[in-house]
Amino acid sequence: MQVNLRRYGVYLLRWQASTPLLAGVGILLAGMGQVIAAVVANLIGGLIFFWVDRFIFTSQTLAAQWEVREHIVCVDCGTVSRGYRLVRTDNYDRTNDSRPEFRCETCSLRKTEELRRRGIKIE
Ligand SMILES: [Zn+2]
Image (cartoon, rainbow, N blue to C red; front, side, top):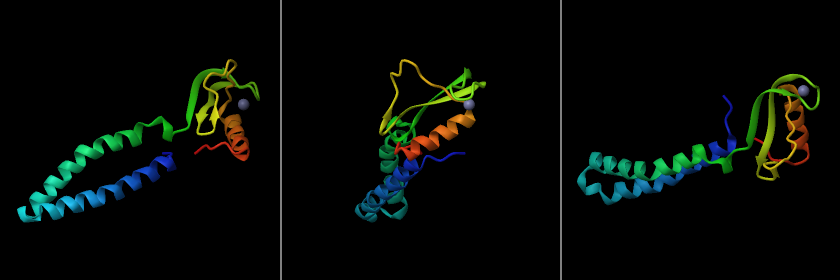
């Protein structure tokens, strides 16, 4: 499994954001007893963080976008295989490339390293 570190970081921050909310509700409702306060706090947390978590796990702004196609001819070595192409990251955009270049897995890894050295942000 590959973990997107940016997603993971945002997710950890989101847990920190839920701390004061749950603590605050716990204090406000302390008179109702700890169990009820915890139930209400978790209900409120769930109502809010369902949407936050959904954004975290589906947001394209947190991900580098790749296009994968079967049976392409690698532009570097000519191998016919599954091909990869980096479409977009924070500071790289080939969304409307009129002649998209696909590469086999090996060449794609090498090209990714090259792009990183040129300062393109890829997880
Ligand atoms: Zn290749």
